[in-house]
Length: 214
Length: 263
Image (cartoon, rainbow over all chains, first blue to last red; front, side, top):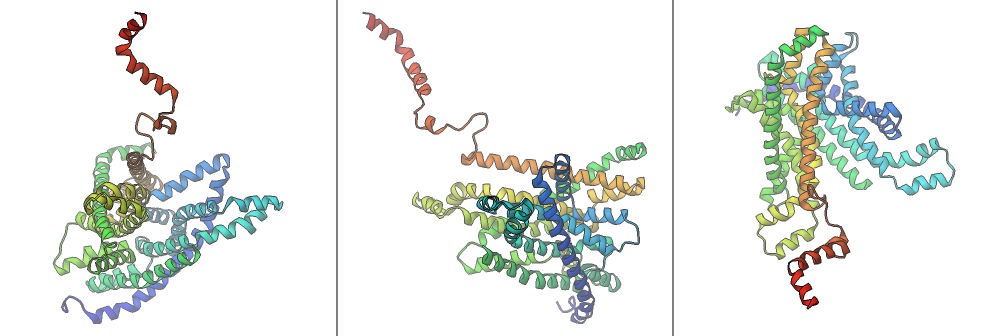
């Protein structure tokens, strides 16, 4: 075992990986912000039954949801002008991809608001916009928080896909180190351990939130 | 555009091969995932700590580390320990273990949401554990599982695009080759993504069919080609049925009886 696993090398790669972890977390946070805003927009438009727009959006959402994120990333990367940094493209594509998932979460959250709330808002003669802003959405978004947390964790675990568009996040940092030193064992294993160290406690937190909000 | 289309037609045989690789990864991964899910899902429910503990650890481990890391770990690191596998096998094992861990949670959750009375009733009927699960519990849990498993299957197809990076010639590889041949990024990737979409769509329809079939077996949907009897039919309250039955019952003996009456 000791001749295969070299602790010195493992410590040597750690600073690179922690640098990469920052990028990974950054991409997750920015991607999730985009996903939660865009997902809400999708959910609202899909509810509205605007003649052509809704049908079109439904197809786009299904299409994005059913095709690989990896291919989408490379596609957008190849199309966009070279001035745009790869990280920005990565965040936007991650955000759009997860927005299609989040729209489902919002839909379920909005449907879960009891119909009495709508009726009460109508009875109080609140205008439509006020009903949404002050009555429905605050309750719906509370329903969506666990879903949002779960998707944030799964987005975190999908950020390594960014290696395909040469963003140096944690996994590409490991691969780069491996290519330079011809030893992949320590870097890739360490990446796995780091992922577990971040995502497992977060998933426990989300589970607690789920129980508290339920 | 017509040039591009003819390039696509020239490359159709290779498209077939690539789709086959993607399908092999998907189906192989899905079968392995289902086996893993059943073992770990039932393992997580047992009372014995020696089974439950390891099951939970394995599930959390594969859910907690990323698919990309697992795939490359099996591809690059495992050979150093003396386990060398073909690239296709690496892909299937990585996809199967990763999504199997997710599916194990689905299996566990669905089994737990079957009402406890079902277990008790099956025990009261003196069914063995295997029979209880096979005939009573699993069919009910299966209906609950299928929608979530469909989502995971789509995730698995999408994950299989990674295979390109471990030297496999899958659909993703075909797409990049098409781009190289036509020099048209938009065209090549639109075609590639459409093929992925078509595969996902067909598999979704297949899973929906499975769901309908499973529901039908539980009596939650009307059987094929007919409708479930309504309550009044089931309780034989419907007058029309009764007259038909009477007519049927009377018909053979009808003439003799009428003779008697006439006589």
